[in-house]
Amino acid sequence: MREESKSHLGIAYLYTTIAAIFAIVTYLQLLFYNPIDKYYMKAFVLLFGTYAAIWFVLFKLNKKRNQSLSTIFKDCTARKTMGVILLKSGLISSFLYIPSSINAVSLIIKDEIDLSVIPSIICVLLFICQILLGLYLLKCKLKTDEMCKSESVIGIAFLYTFITFIFSLVEKLSQAIISCNSLDEYFLLRFATYVTILLVLYILNKKQSQSFVAIFNNNTIRKATGVLVLIEGLISLSIKINSVIDTIWLRGIIRDDVLHFVQSITLSIVGFIIIAIQILLGIYLLRSNKEKTAKHNIAE
Image (cartoon, rainbow, N blue to C red):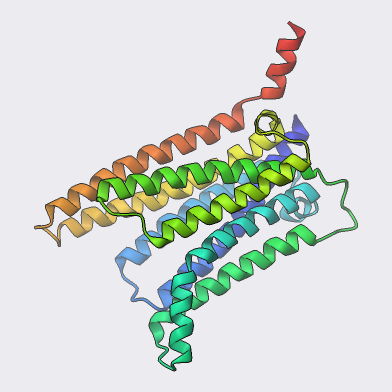
């Protein structure tokens, strides 16, 4: 149980550290090309305050288990799991920027480039760096590496991607229904990329003789996925709180647009419900013990 605890807490600590670094860099470049006002500063404080709190808790928990970033990095399973997750996230994000990237390239070719396209170019470069880092973590081999549990790496990646896909799909569909908008090209790109990645991970799990039930019943996979889902839910919660504060502040400026205000509040309520379910699911996966239950039932 102790080794299992060290494994999923190590993955969570590594994930939070890398995700926070990329988020900080992304926000700083956005602040550089936009006027710094109370909206940006509030969003910055809320988001990175949440990252800092999560990071500190994970730091303390890992320290109790004599785990530092360097020792976690030397864990082949944790390192490769993080590599797959980074690769997946980078691919999904970069594909979403295909339309803006094409527009930026066309402006550069026409020699009509302006400051408006620079943030898009920087974002794409950041996503490419994320993909390259993911590939490096996957390919990196250390002398201290023990036998890597490839079934755990692929299983965590599949279950985590599947759960985040479901929550993302529900959120986007609810937004489209409440706002009475049709699904745009960004949704279709995101959906197609998610489905493709899930299909690849499913095939890789099949090669490891892992069914969805086997993945779900594996304690290491469940707990690692649970803590990752919980962290993502908490980050989404801070972003949603920021969105609600913006809606309230803008309500004082846009007094006549009642319909827009009602839609924003409705979207926020639905969003909070989705995030609450995500956080509860993460806690459930983190706390439940399928292998122990199975052994107990066999004994009976």
